[in-house]
Length: 247
Image 1 (tube, rainbow, N blue to C red):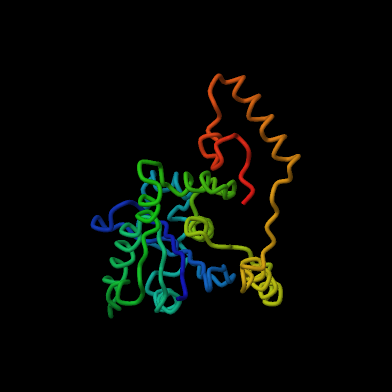
Image 2 (cartoon, rainbow, N blue to C red):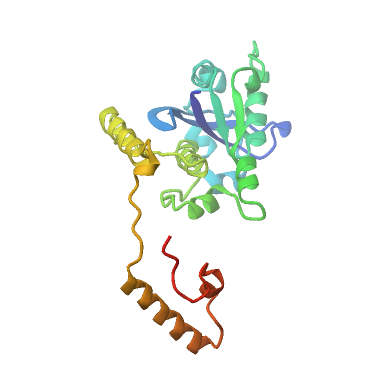
């Protein structure tokens, strides 16, 4: 399935109080690889932005005054997420805001759930790491993912980072450098390593020589003298005289 990793920035915390989406960032994953295809837009909220929110993302009403309104970007956004599995960290927050924006449109397209499958990466992280911090920054530290550029929250940057985190959490590969030929060679090598002989009776069995068995007994004696207890090996010796069985 095509996957889209999504993040938003908003004017505040509650759409019920009229707060709006001011930035949307999405990156695409196909075959567990980042494709480089993305969707990103700033949005004019036509309202003031809470001071606490500005401290998080640095976006002000003045900066956004010339950006398009949500109604102008809605179709492009829906085209990008349509039919995909959309991965969001703390999905109820972002989905709640986006559904609110859809409800404000003259012809509402309905809810996000009608356009895509929604996966909450925060819920996944909590199941994988119970009792631990599972913020995006905490997960970056846990999976050794560079988030040094994240001095302020930004929807596209956070979506890119979350994509790396999600693929790491689910055991995936994020590199884009392997071409199809090298991938096929890698698969062939792995198959060769796993392959076992069809007739295992032909495997050569090497048994200990008389000299090696004598050295083994000397080692057991040293261990017994040092520990004051007979080594466990003696109790497993099928012959009972401390020598290795030959067969």
